[in-house]
Length: 132
Length: 144
Image (cartoon, rainbow over all chains, first blue to last red; front, side):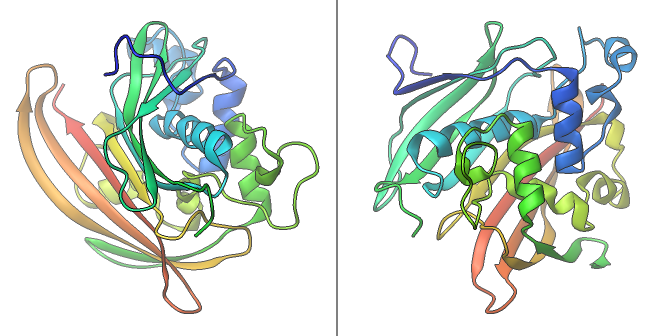
């Protein structure tokens, strides 16, 4: 998607760490063993503990809201394509989308880490960044 | 929470502490999320805030088990949020309903037989039933 075109936005998030994933698990109320137990994660074939899919989606949501307005996000659709792991440094890139609807601006995005896309999708934001 | 086998109802309050906790874990840095600077008296919830409904009786994993899925073999496929009038805010009282919107099976070269289920959730303002957010979550039970 959008290969070779300059993104509207590029934001690098802080490194994914075990403490950060544990904090997220508590916040979201979603405690799965692959997210906090390195031995279990490695036994399942991962290099390290893995992030929740919704952790990746959460980064995307925060990244868009902080760039385009905290009250601006109207629609957010995320497809998960790979797993984020501890040690990854996720990067959000955003491009213009096709049709956001009346009064809305369409955006396409990818969240990637270590050369692989972990999530991609689309969003619609209020064109004026407002809350209604 | 009330439940039949394919429909769950619950209540949610958008709490200040939970907004800050979730936003901080995601590395948010805007004062409006309560994680930096001089936060306002009413915080804005991050777009994926409805994940916290797990604390209000609707944990997706438990729903899957109720439906006969093996939660240890479930992958998250897609997630969609639609906010007709903007984000949730601190202090809102909401009534939620989650239903099984779709179940189907298909084959995948990498994962074998897939059982796909889509949950549809609506959160409405308790005071007047105004729709605040719709959420579609698609998960897949993989064969291998």
